[in-house]
Amino acid sequence: MSPAVPVTIRPEDAGDESAIFALTEAAFANMPFSDGDEQHLVERLRADGDLALSLVAEDAERIVGHIAFSRVSISDGAQDWYGLGPVSVWPELQGRDIGGALIKRGIADLRQTGAKGVVLLGSPDYYARFGFAHEPQVTFPGPPPEYFQALVLDGDLPSGEVTYARAFG
Image 1 (cartoon, rainbow, N blue to C red):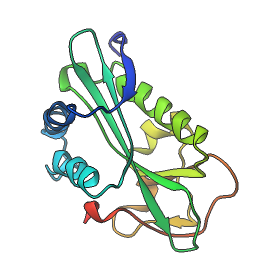
Image 2 (image 1 turned 90 degrees about the horizontal axis):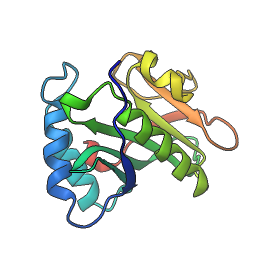
Image 3 (image 1 turned 60 degrees about the vertical axis):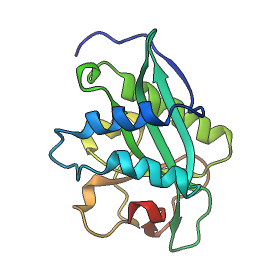
């Protein structure tokens, strides 16, 4: 792993949109699991008012990372659950814990607001370090089940099918 890059993490500000778009597009350009639409997804979440938490990481010169969280619904009626994603880092800076720092800060910020939990679709090997795990009682149709993971922040683990914001289509 390359050395960590010193960054400052802050909430997205008005005027950050074009930098986030370019960063997200570049971050997912060569990812085999990407549909090439992540940059538009962030725009749709923002336009629909579903971007519940949007954080950027900056180095001394520019925005180098971004993470988005949006509300999800769960068929058992559980409230205050969020979906993590996408998380983006410039390709030349990936592997330097910028994404990890964004994930940790996002989870901490959500916990402070009273969120009950976070779900995501991603690598079990990567996200386990943040406490995420495949929980068979929380489901998302389509991808292999082990890639859909949950992290309880407060209370009990819900039981049901997760639906993401409309922007995920």
